[in-house]
Image (cartoon, rainbow, N blue to C red; front, top):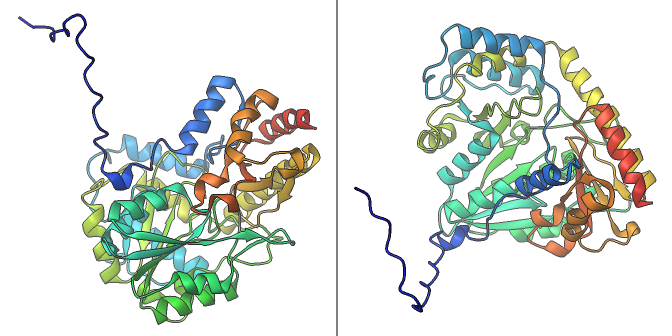
Length: 407
C-alpha cells in the first residue's frame, strides 16, 4: 500500500524554498544560449540561424561506412583510446594537411566530440589557483570547463577594427600572462567571429607560452573551413617551433563532415599530455560512438576535392547571407572562416544584442545569437550578433527575405 505525502495543515506557512544545490562556481551557467535560441525558433516558427548545425548530411562514403559498421556488429565498447583505424586515420590526416606527425598509439585520443576533449584537457591540466588565458568572445563550454577545474579564466578581448577583422592588443595579451598561467586556450579558426589568427599573432602566443612555461590547448574544429579570400591561412599552433611538445591539439568530425550529432572528436599531442587527458576522459564518457568511428576514419581519407568543395560551398553561403544582412541594414563583419558571420546591430538602432535577438523572431521570423554572452567584458560585444550560414541556399534565401522586413 502506498501513502501520499502529508499535506500541510490549513493556514500553515508554506515550506521554505530549497537553496540551490549547485556548487557556487557553476551557478553562473544556466541553459546554453544555443538551446534557448533554438527553442525560441521552434516556438515562433522562425528560421533558425542561431545554432551552428548544417541541415544536410555528410559525404555518402561516410554514411555508407557507418551503416556497414552498424550491420557488421561494431556496436560494443571500442578500445578506450579509440579504434585503431580511426587513430591511424587522424594521424595520416594531420600529416597530410599540416605536416604534423603523431603516433596513433599513445599520441592520439578519440573523444566524445571536441567539447569533451576540451573539458578533459582543462580538467587534466588545471586546478584551483591556476589561470587559463583565452580569447573572448569564447565558446561557452570554455568558461564552464575552466570553472569545473577550479581555475580562473583570463580573457583577452578580440575587437573589430576598421578593416572588419577582429584583432587583439598585444599588450593585453602579455598582461593576461603571469606566474599562475597554466594553459592558453586558443580557437582558430575562431567561433563566433570567423577570425583566422595570423602567423604573427600565433608567434606572439607561442612566445608567451614558452616564456611562462604554459601549455596550449587548441580548438581547431574549423581547420578546413578557411575561405579563399582570407588574409591568413590556417596554421596549427603545434607547428611553431617549441610548441608541439606543449600543445594538445583538438579537432572533430562534426563541422568538416556535417555530422555534428555524431560527437566524434580527437586530441593529439605528445605522449605525456595525451596520457593526462586520457586519464580524465575515461571517467567522463569512457568511450563513445563505436560504429561511427570507422565511418569517420573513411571520411578523413577522402580526396582533397571533398575538402575544397565543402569549403567553397560554405564560402558561397557566407556571401549569400552576408549580402542579405548588409541589405537589411546590418554592418557585416566578414568572416575568414567557420560557419558564422557576426554583424553590428547599431545601424538598425540596436543597443543590446540579447534584447535584439529576443525580439527578432517577432519582427521578421529569424533567430540569431547575441555574442555578448560569450564575453566577460560584456560591453565589448553588446552590439554584435551571430548568424549561422551552414544551411541550404533556399533556407538562407528565406531568411534573407524575412530580414528585409527590418529595413
